[in-house]
Length: 211
Image (tube, rainbow, N blue to C red; front, side):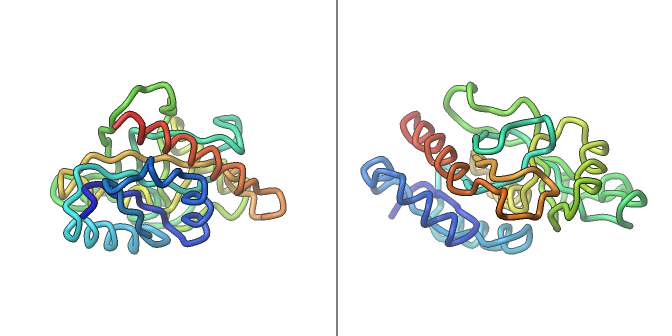
């Protein structure tokens, strides 16, 4: 049985990413599995897969949006920290996160999770990833989130759930996100999904080579 996991949220992302990976690079040491869409599915599915495979390490890879001026559409980044947005009290300007109101998500796990990966640091983003329960619907919503979290680079919907499962099971995690769009832009005709996933696959290949 494979001793490591390559997790991808959706079948569309998986098919495009795996088609660019040399089977020999994955070998018998990596199992490719779907983790599902969104925080809840990703956390539950990752925990189930960890129990099944008992992996030594995990890579989460897929697409994400980039906050204006903080990265490039069509590129890919690794992340070392993820913060959850959307679990707490209120919405919009009145939103207060779980940590803000004095609650942990579980035990000592708060809104932010730092995770250790491996390999060199050349592809690691300077800022963090923001994991949301619902993607930004507009530029104004994206701007509000960027103001609330000044060091975020990109917005995704699974990394916090996957990171929480990995924390609970003490499994090292790498998060790779291909940047398909600007956060808040819901016009898919402007998205660069194929280019983003190609960049993400190339970054994953470098990680696999450094294992």
